Length: 258
Image (cartoon, rainbow, N blue to C red; front, side, top):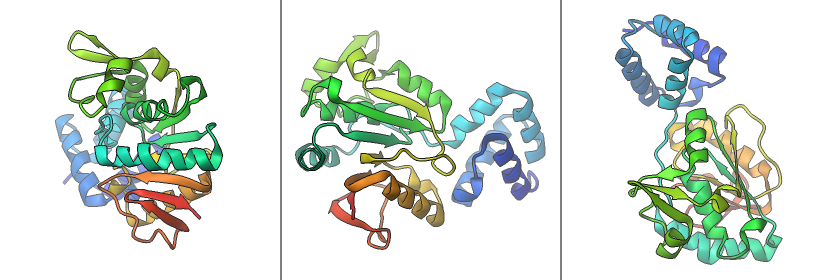
């Protein structure tokens, strides 16, 4: 046993403003215990002292804690629906000056996918995507915009040819795409949300939250959306109580604000 996990959660909140009470405890505690053991700390208390004194270990902890599995055009059928139904619907409702937020954006695959999807409907200089994540390391990787072949496998071939350049074994995304995304650090459980969004994309992240924390985030997304704006969630997630949260279903994994 590594000690008092409750006290550890309090210490982590004081250091990082990350509330571990909002994550499913069994799963998260197992991940944390693995990291602590790999760092040869003998207790939660010893590990807290380690990350207090070593900024690199603190960054390692935040990076390990957050779930950063991402790829371009993940779940292609859902992106086809976005292309064929959702984006045209948003343009009909709001015009082409859309405010788009990619929440928990990880290494940038998703916001860059959004820019490419929107580029089929409007010039790049009309596109602006806010992309946020709690993890500064993945935001740095996102700004770099360099990916392996597996990550970009789902990108439609015409967009791949237009917006990626092979550099060694990696693929560098176009500066024109990168310029349309504004990356910012943001804690979904703590920070103020953007307002007046037409489309919010947050996929395969909230599954790690408790039911209470998940509903709180969905409520905040609702407040951040314009009426008739769209929330796009992941294939690993469900919003069974969407009516109680004042959403309407706009298709599988898509919900509109009432």
